[in-house]
Image (tube, rainbow, N blue to C red; front, top):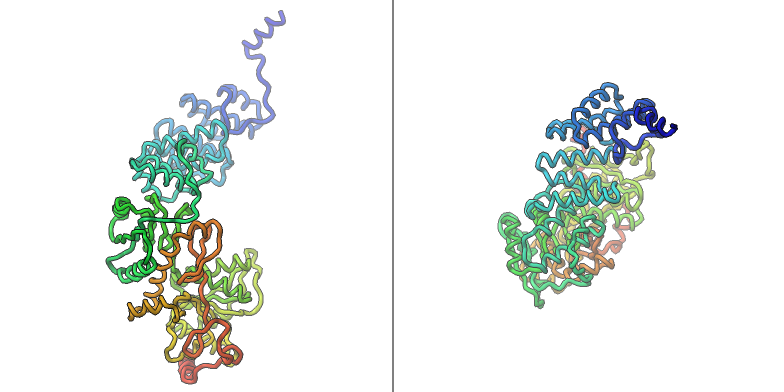
Length: 604
């Protein structure tokens, strides 16, 4: 009789499951029926009732009970608080997708503030975005959303997510995947695009394909896409040296930069003398895809170049099946295995300047740079390196025009100490040195203003400039430059170098700019066999352009030669004549008179 009574009670709903202490995560695994979730909602507190109703709506959406989901969602929205609205919009977006209305789903999803979502809701957001992109036939964007949620999943759910990413990208052509590398996808998505472009490539050259896959594996050692690498892929032994048999050099051999390319080409040819490898030069004044096919057909196994940033970026997305030493740095170079970047940039010289000033014991430098894009990039790079060394920013000031230079100098010398986010000064003390990111004309014009504004009877602040301010030695002395320290290639100063004599004999009218580009080409070819060693073991090797090392991003870094100008010639820093180092600095009388007159006119 008792058993019969209990069965009757269960059948009539008199006995129900007890209310859990707290509802599960709103966007966790669904385990009960929608009706059971609603029963819990009726018994729960208003806050918990919201979570139970969300679970009920999600269950109906999963079961394609769209009418029930719509009714409950409408009811829920009518009583939702502002904090609950993003969750309502997430459910509404899923309902729109269930009704094949991707445009409505897009509007709802784009209106959601992602920062307001808890981790499980954010995961759900990425999933709905992926579904939306799939309905809009954008598989790469859909995969990108799935990549964003991958690390937050575990077990079977993570494996299912991995397989869905692969399924979205597997049907795409290698060309379309390469083109997508131009777009701003997250790093892991970029890794997927590169991997699938290799796997989907129709090439029959298994050796090149295996090289690319091993290079990909080196670049992305922990990438989840490694699950799809071929099981029979043999790991390439760790390289200790490159020994290319056919080097392809990519330069703008025609057009406005042909003379610069010619200087680099001659440097490469000079360094290649006596070597058994083949050199082939390719003009980059053409489509990069076609050019890459040409050098592959030629049997090249190493690339030097390109020189222009756009060409480097275009070749980068093709993911060459061979090592590469680019002769510039693109705005966003990828940290990829066997990919190196060698540039003669003002920014890198500014970073070298920061390191040198720090090594010289300066702690309060003033950076004085032109207010144009190049000047601001150079100042920013100096400041970035300085903060790494000192833990605080440098004082930075800009100049604009000749007419305003006096005011610019006065303002620069009165630059207050940088402040932290709380407004407190984090540097103290007077300016103890000046780094000028200026060219030779600007440097000669500005220096007297610094001396005059500070009082020309005082000893000049230690002043440092880069190769942009280089003036050949052996000319009539420019007394306003006395004591200035300049960083440049050792090759520029070493008149006794036999190679320098050979080059000047063969190209007697070569300018210092031409010589620098020649040195870039010479060092690029000379570096090839040392790149793996330098990138893995560190150290530096001497070159024409400086002491060369390779950082973690594959960028060639240069330590330059610092020289001091004195009476028309450049001397090793610290070896200048005593009058420049130990006596008060004074202006050339004629220049001082001219400067005084100009200052009077400005005052008027």
